[in-house]
Length: 334
Ligand code: KG4
Ligand code: ZN
Image (tube, rainbow, N blue to C red; front, side, top):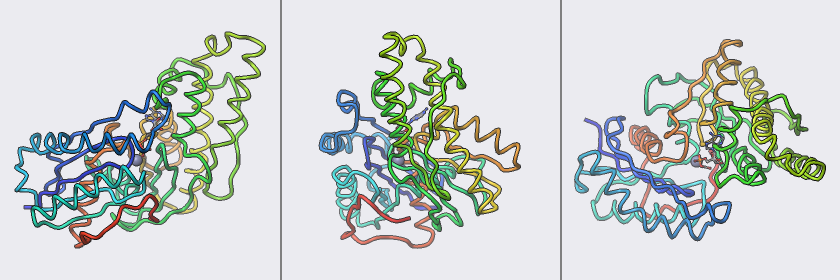
């Protein structure tokens, strides 16, 4: 019988709790914060405050779903970072308090590693070594995954994350925050070849997404000056074209990373892994080039605590516990 792990996630704007036992997910609850939509982006102070309101009801819900009493919890796991410091502190403090009260060990989890390990929540599971691609609102990283907890950063964005580019472009088009999923939705009805946008080429396996965002803004302004209804008229084609461009930028780097590492599997994680265009293109390219693509179910792509729990499960196997003095960190190397 594996240990009963209660896992908490509070690194950005999702408050989540999960119960994991013997590597199996028993209960899971997530509260997404709506408050930020009004501001067009996450407001860190508000996020921390809402985490404080949500954390007890969310933990209670996850325990109820798993049919576990609080005193049965044997390990408490939490996201140590990277993320928003105020948000991380809520989960970290709650975890420390609970572990102390229950007299059980604590496990500090790396949020990016957990996004990759989300692929071990359900079957089929990938085999090591594989290439990990984490694409979210805060990160765009290519990672060589040698084992559950042994990961090497190969390349990353030098400015905006791809999710940030999706969200900023969506904002320019008037979609609510976070707008990535709206672009995805309208893209399915548009022509991806209708408009071309200049992309930034970065050395080796690094990315840059801030230039394309600016190029899109100037393109919209220029076309809007000529034709005031341009945005309304071409909404679907604009979404399809910008999504295809962003996807292509990622696909090219994945191909380069596969060639560089010689791996046969590519594993996605992070909110943008829910993008239908990215999933489809990577699957097609993988089939052509002889590598296999793994993507978690959409609810395990965006921020969740099931991935924190599964990461903690592997950390418990190797005795990777932390002390009650551990601190939240907004940045942590892999
Ligand atoms: O992993 P996540 O929940 O939070 C971070 O750690 O950042 O990712 C959120 C990001 C947002 O930028 C959101 O717009 C994007 O994931 N996203 C999508 C889609 N669903 C979520 N982007 C493109 N297409 C989607 N279907
Ligand atoms: Zn995340």
